[in-house]
Length: 287
Ligand SMILES: [Zn+2]
Image 1 (spheres, rainbow, N blue to C red):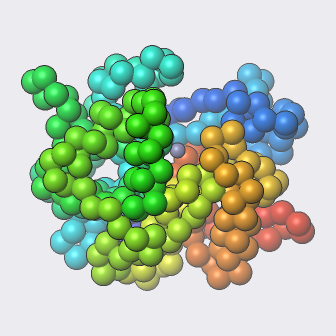
Image 2: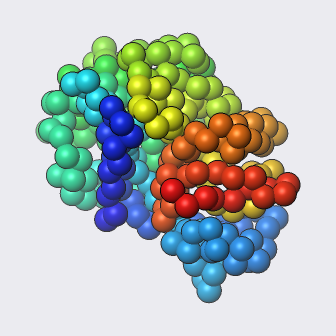
């Protein structure tokens, strides 16, 4: 696994891999494209593509932010032991993720969810004896009310997000550890939510305001460097494609003009993005 850490000045940000590589057929993630997209994207991040097999290569990770005595986990990956028959690599996993987290679960005082897809919530719970219990039992768990309500309504009709609402989110709420908050929430001084709608209605990025080097955990507003080349390229997994494009265009333009470092959740080889304009599209500057 390819875990990493960076000192942003006053805040340490780490990325702990939960699935790497996470491979998807190109036309599953980006319908309507052809393999030339991957050939071009390979120049931005050769570790993000497999041109021969026509695959997009992502990673699923969990972020740990440490500052001012706080240990904050952002998102929950896939998790262990979850029943995910529709995706073989997520089904009944046994990994050493918690050993690589770098902190004991009881030291985590907050867990933030950018959104509630199955690859972002799994480690919120683990199996103990005969049920799913909170992994981070001393942590407040924070999700936007818009996001929670959207999936709660879907889950009332059929199990949502591969069943992860039931096995990874509801146990947190039932334990009294879940806070449903506004879209512009400030979870701690130095961290701020930023609404990034489109991938899901209540998705937020995490602005690391307390760092001397301005950075934004961009969640799934950008999945892959191919979307720098074609900013209007929408993934199949976005609930509102038009909103997703508008969000991405605004984010990339802002990152290019203001120099904010973007940390896209699923970026593989290039993890911290310094975005620059390149005609009608964007490219990555060397950090
Ligand atoms: Zn994701």
